[in-house]
Length: 207
Length: 256
Image (cartoon, rainbow over all chains, first blue to last red; front, side, top):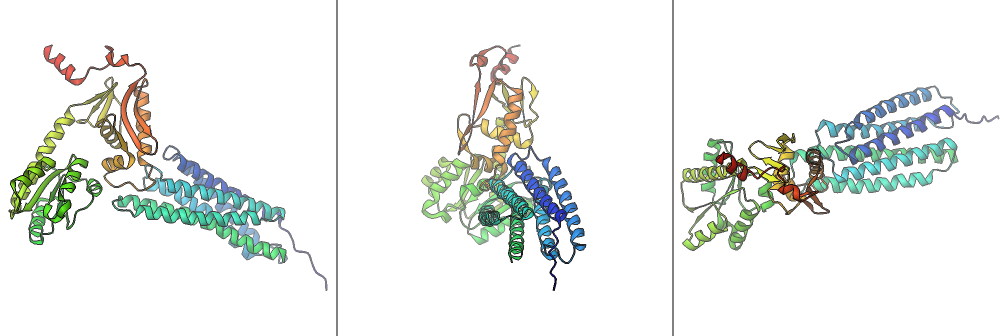
């Protein structure tokens, strides 16, 4: 019986890398926006462009896996889960940026700045992990880092939401910031979903 | 008269029920509290007046009354309590209460006294507001919700003006961020909220543009802000170019 070697889709790996870079850029913009809010509120527009770019990349990836050969190195289901999670990172980032303007937020909260920073660091780790995937290298370091950042994000997010329910806080502040904190946390969670999918891929590739 | 905001601290259900009906009929915004709340929460309620039964507060009644009157100088405080001696009434009024009503009393009388206290306070506040605060090159006019340098408006937003008005009302005093937020925004400050810092930054930018040689708002790291005009050259205060204090200007105008 003759075995055929799996086909490595170079273009698909490039697109995934591109999606990682895009997520990393979008989250960096959000960090920048929150660090100097409301002076840098106009960055919401750039983040929206990143979100549209993310959709374009996701579409290209899905188009590509729909036509992938049976012997592809990466399982189509894994690639689909991966690109969806990457798209979610950018979507939640854009959602947080949009909420700042939509709710007429006048000034940032420190916890939002911390969460945005954790999200950006997670996205950088995701970007590096996808580079390692392309190069066929070990990505364990990045994946561990993403899990650690997610744990830290959970802690900050819980404390942030709890701080909104202290006595005497303006109910409008609670409504606005609870949504923003949740979007940021979901962005960090999506990075962790990327890490989970990558872990599965690395196990399959090693096996 | 604008819509009044009032809180009643009283556990006498019959009295409170009748009073509530009257206050509702007057179109006032009111809250009935069966137990005392911290002064910080009262600040957040942005009240015009507080009606309090001291008997409800037990042994802490005097300290509570003193704290509320001290921490919320703009709040009208009426004590409505049964069985009081002359000494107690004098003590209460000296601690800062605006009026004292002996119970049982007619709700209509309470309503009239609330109106009287609020009217007196608004009149006093209006007089204070009409008198501008002059600090450095800055003239802060409460009656116009605006500040001027050399007759030029700083184009302050309502929030920026309220912040400047609050800070300039306590020159040389460090106001913690939490207190600034409570007084300007009317709510307790959520931990980590940077609103005060952002608005101080905006205010400073406008002040620096309009009055470049002066520094008005000083940061006390980890605490809050202090208003104290500091010019590059102290002699600017005495120079003919500097604006004369309003009282002096008015005297000059009267002489002319």
